[in-house]
Image (cartoon, rainbow, N blue to C red; front, side, top):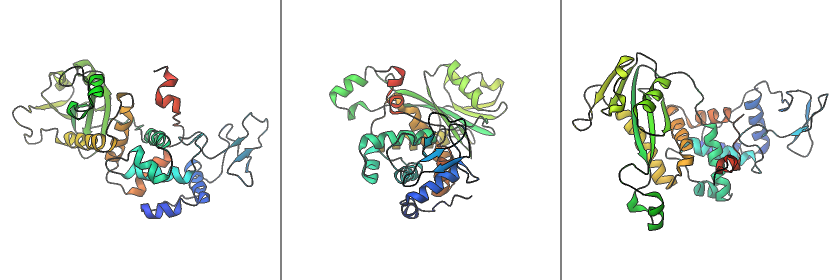
Length: 316
């Protein structure tokens, strides 16, 4: 059973306005053979209940939750929103170059800003990279600081956020880019040698060409990599030695954060990194193909509101 995917936003809006077509698409995503299975026991002895969008499992012995929807076990679970709104949200988030804010998404879908904010983060969860394959060839490594500029903050917000100069109150983000390929990003606790080099060794194949700036924390990597350094105090490019690919990615990321989201709490920053990395890594695909990839990754990645707000972790 195939899953025909619209090619444009206009076509997607028309196609997914029909909830039956949404169900057909979701079934094709979850069960490529077209056979709906119980998410509790994997039984095929299930039937759709007439007049609803629920299914019932008739397997023996029975289990407590015999009724289920196609949202069960996905980022959509327990959401009152229909798949028509969810699919449109996924299309917009996957394809808007600088992201889409919760306020704009709320207006587009006709839902509250609070609901749109949760939707945004759930879709970002589906965008998370799950590959263990290491980067190779020619790789660039760099870090940047993420945080608001004091001159743009209200005085009360400035006192809460800014307690020092430079990058003291900003979040350190590290990126590794395979030239012509994918980027990997993560939030770092510091820029010390142990932390940065551990990430490099985790994501880059030994023996690869590695380019970085002159930060001393990268000293010693030439034992395992063809490591070359560009000193930005002197030049930004020396033949093939530069980190301009990552600088371009940082520009995209910061344009989204400062221009679209305005303010991002450090607690949530890693999800914004996942979102921008997803779009960058699939930059050569069509809008339809990016949407399909997100749809294929919604299963098994539930994010509850209490987890999102930190209440599940006991955070204040």
